[in-house]
Image 1: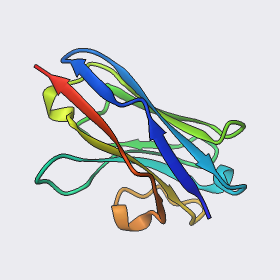
Image 2: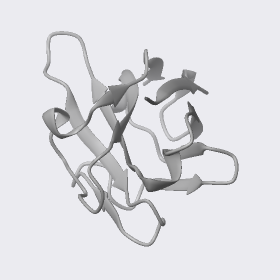
Image 3: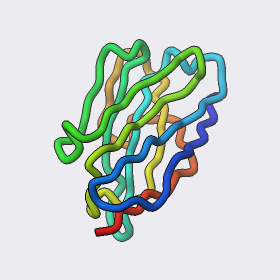
Length: 125
């Protein structure tokens, strides 16, 4: 069982930066692929980024490539999402998720077993 708690969301102007954190509980965190998703009002939850258990492999949505960076610190049971050059269209609730199936770098919400409660990111124009 893995429990996830996101933090770091807030209000920022376009062009600004935020760093989201996701603290995980559970001894098996280091073997899980971790992902970030987001959901804007009236829209489906969409993939943002994912990172393998070792941190060696990452995947990004085209809309955030070059602006967002996912990373993890297994010693701290934490995964991060550094968001730079934020745009108003990045406004959403951001969710951290964990996939217990070893080796997969999923991009669909259905591939993840555990979810945090989400943190709001609002980018003003």
